[in-house]
Amino acid sequence: MNPNSHADAGEPGAPEEWEAVFWDIGGVILDLESVRTAHVAFVADLLERHAVDATIEEALATWRSTVGDHFRGREGTEFRAARDGYQKGVEAVVGDQIRREEWEPAFRAAVRESIEPVPGAVETIERLANRELHVGVVSDVDDEEGKWMLERFGVRETFDSITTSEEVGRTKPDPAMFETALEKAGAEPDRSLMIGDRYDHDVRGAEEAGLHGVAFGAEDGPAVTYRIESPPETLAIIDGDRTR
Image (tube, rainbow, N blue to C red):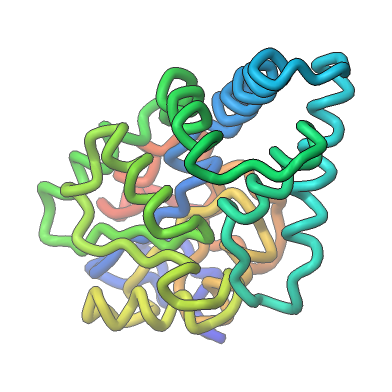
């Protein structure tokens, strides 16, 4: 754990110069409500295509519980692919086995039409990329899906590195996630920020790896070095104009 991880900018313990800023995707770059909208549209399409005798509310409950059980069944921080959870969700809703090639195009179309970035996230990422700073992603997403979403928002090539759980084989708060990202960046942990929307996974996980945790929508707690209400506030932290 970094003993200076709770220091305010401009006070002893806060670096004079930051080396890296890492972003989670879901809830920080990607608006999660827009993801839920995409899933509703996809499940509604499943009902129509396969003539399923269920209401949209019933089908959504089946989808969510099945996908949720997929992730809850993992041991510790082991990685489980979301696409496998979606496969189980599709089959639970339809009541039959369906090849991924049959449902995935419709799923991707629903996501493409619905997902939106968190307001201010794209612009902040682009502004950070113009500085002498490593800008990276540390996310629990499937590798292909995460990169596709960043591409959708026009920022994939803006990032200097992208570290996903599928690549590492673990999920946050496993230290391997943060260590891999830091190695790619060639950055010191106490000169690095991690922006996340989940306290235990993103913020406390980052702190235990020696980084400064930035809570965006995450619960408060001792691991929070900074709290922001919008992504552009990250710029003030980097500039040393922002206290906790």
